[in-house]
Length: 272
Image 1 (tube, rainbow, N blue to C red):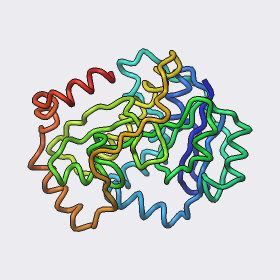
Image 2: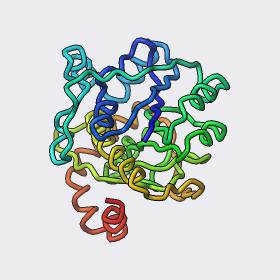
Image 3: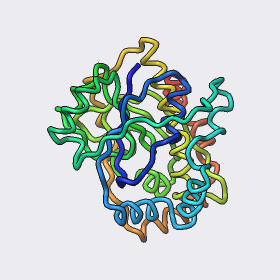
Image 4: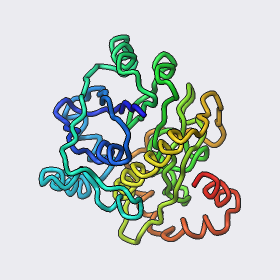
């Protein structure tokens, strides 16, 4: 199966042995290209620091500089897959917008079966129609309850479980069908920033599992709309502080929620 990854990072960002790329290669997928919508360096650093928190951001930066921030050995435990010892360095293509005519033409040339989104903006119908199977995206919350932006923060603020969902992408905002979903149980030391970091690692596993299902013949829900729940937007920094306080109060709720909420439990068992 041929994959194209979409990302939104500065031009200097390296995808050599990057965690998701390496994991997908280990599962036998062909990453035929990474299509980058360029972001100015200062803006990217500001966004990463804001989302992760300064402490988590510095820790991740140091790990990456030491060569430990890409391939995650922890994800291999229990999967039965082994990462290749050879360097994995996919071709990278840079554009001002993922929806530009030039970008659409390049992706058509790459002819992917699936486009995998990673932290991108809205993808318009002209691009959604390019891949043979469809487009999938990791989302850091339960769907459709928490659609939109900063959903890890909003989940924590509302005292709801932290989760990662992988869903099909259509013309709506996070309104596709959920393909895989898994809860994350916060520890007393967690912040919304550290939970975002954990969510990124879990997203790699769930994306791979969803792609394996599609490769094995699972039907892709291309035109289904799941627009229930609420759409959220950027969270004010003061509310984020409150979300971190709420998070400490609700430690352990993910397990309780999964145990007592029959609908969520049934959905997760069906998906996994």
